[in-house]
Image 1 (cartoon, rainbow, N blue to C red):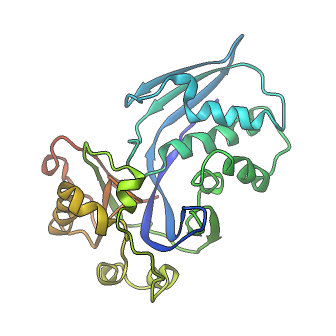
Image 2 (cartoon, rainbow, N blue to C red; image 1 turned 180 degrees about the vertical axis):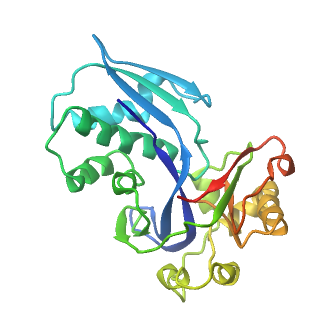
Length: 269
């Protein structure tokens, strides 16, 4: 069986408050986008995993899809599998690629072995793997709060618009992204902002991480500016970076504008 885990972007991100456990509560909108990996499982005498595509800087046996199998084994017997993972979603990009792979593995195992596990239980299992993982179980736009693990479904679609996403060869660590952050509650909720025309988002929707990340990595800020110069209705860094996306009214051909970067262009589904 084969499945195609997709990425997500953050439409705005507000750092709301620092928690007593050292983490931060945030508010954001997760939106699925059609940048996809490929994940296949085949029954085998023993469990193995082969990684191709974008190289990953970790041993295959430590891949998050293996952790997904471990978590699911707490609820059901899972026989050995030959796993093939083709990586196309850049990692360290704020796109949730690893979380998507894990969540899609859970769903694929449920379907392949016909396990009696509903989406709510799969979300609980996914939450043991990572904060973003539960989002990819239902894989629909949500308003996320808490540490990004509390979801409220929203009726919203970007179908008819086009995406250009740019990932420079820059890694932004979580401590770097939060450095100097001043948590504050937004005056207007993202749930209200997305009801307004996209053309107005530039003035009302923000990603609070940009305030800290752009001064440390000017090249990331420059990408956002270039997307606006190319005609983006709205552009933003996704999550804590380092990818930046632009939403356009028409298809783009901007790969030559961003040399030495991963560039994905296509329509929202």
